[in-house]
Length: 88
Image (cartoon, rainbow, N blue to C red; front, side, top):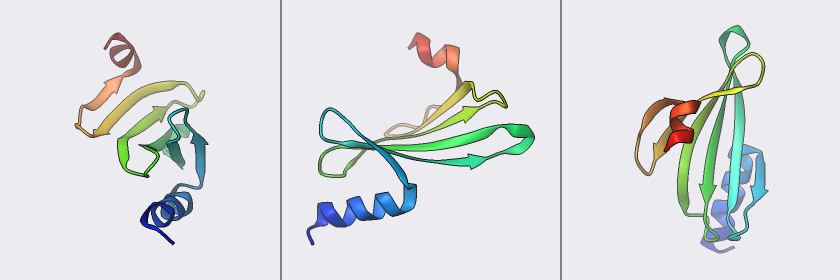
């Protein structure tokens, strides 16, 4: 098994969910329940060689509305309100 296949299997096992992207990469994610009905989704986007392109956390309120994004990789931007993210 080559390195790409090993990474792909590791990501599939860790995240459990994924979408195929147009560039032959993937978007992996898993959800974590939070306090007061809120939740977090951890998202990892990789290229076709399974190299990490982006890693970020999405915060959803109790109505499942996206309220914050915390972009962590390649640069940590801290928590940004959705309106701030959309403006950039």
